[in-house]
Image (tube, rainbow, N blue to C red; front, side, top):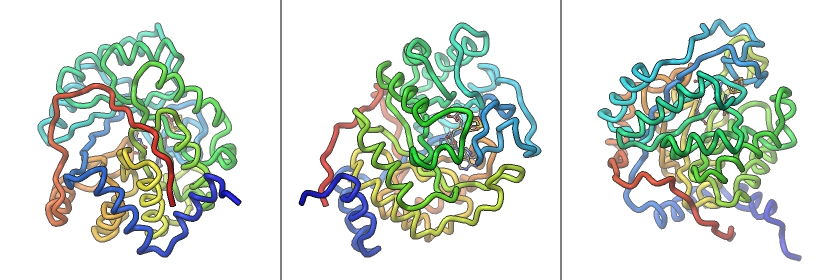
Amino acid sequence: MKSSPFERLQRIYSQPFFDLIQQGRAVYLKNWPNNEVQLCTLLSIKTGGCSEDCAYCSQSARYETGLETERLLSTAEVLEVARRAKSNGSTRFCMGAAWKGVREGTQAFDSVLETVREVSKLGMEVCVTLGQLTDVAARQLKDAGVTAYNHNLDTSPEFYPQIVTTHTFQDRLDTIRAVQNAGMSVCCGGIIGMGETVTDRLRMLEVLVNFDPPPESVPINCLMTMPGTPLEDQPPVDVFELVRLIATTRIVLPRAKVRLSAGRSRLSREAQALCFFAGANSIFYGNKLLTAQNPETDADHNLLQDLGLVPQPPFSDLAAPVTEKVAIST
Ligand code: SAM
Ligand code: DTB
Ligand code: SF4
């Protein structure tokens, strides 16, 4: 009897560890032959005070996390950070806002559009993560110069209601559809270490694989435990489980940037090396994520050098990259 796509994912994931990372490595080498790692700089342009109840997030107004709420940064403030990111070697600049979503026609959204117009002149990919979008707002972002929109599924459809109750998994899918309709590329991944099962992680991957077009980038975050949130006491993720998920993602989404995202500050150099071996080819670069800590840039620079990896060079083609659909083989 023919196995289902989900059974094929399970089979890939549960191979002996070395077979799995070798398969991930082979797919990586075939698709990404230059030993390059994309460096992305993140900036929180509007921090804290969010209406949503995402159980992992320091920025939710529902939890006492001790985070200071900040107003929306001005275009000039963002531009200064973006210029520095560019000169430090980042080829992607990602701006995040602690919003449930965007309301077109508001002063805040107009200001973000102006910021995007200016940042897009610097010659980096421009990514934003602003929560839910309508088709109209998505089109405005695209026209302003956004190349990619980050909107994570975070976990499986089944586990999602245990993590967030103020919006639904379907709301996430609707925004992703608006992003695709507007012609931006989709950056979509999730978080591990929230108490989900391996099945949940693979179910999330199954949903991602079925996107049409497939996601251009897939951030894999390890939960950064935030004091005051419901998930503050979650134990750290097992490194081998992280590497397994990265290799599986690489195998089923060969052309995606697989971004080793939050949680690197807790990983050893050796653990990160395994993640790169298994197929990760992008990181967030800079000592801060949105509110949480990230490794120092010098440490990252040394790590890449020691592994013979190079930062992806600046490029001239800034069209929103799309990825073609590839059949999963086992
Ligand atoms: N508010 C928007 C949204 O939720 O889509 C954009 C910003 S939100 C902070 C972006 C993503 O960061 C989340 O979807 C989640 O995957 C990730 N994230 C947030 N807090 C995290 C944490 N404590 N550990 C790991 N990842 C986290
Ligand atoms: C993503 O998947 N990870 C980044 C980016 N997209 C926006 C955010 C990580 C946030 C980690 C927790 C924090 O800094 O508050
Ligand atoms: Fe708000 Fe996004 Fe944090 Fe959820 S993840 S609380 S929507 S900032």
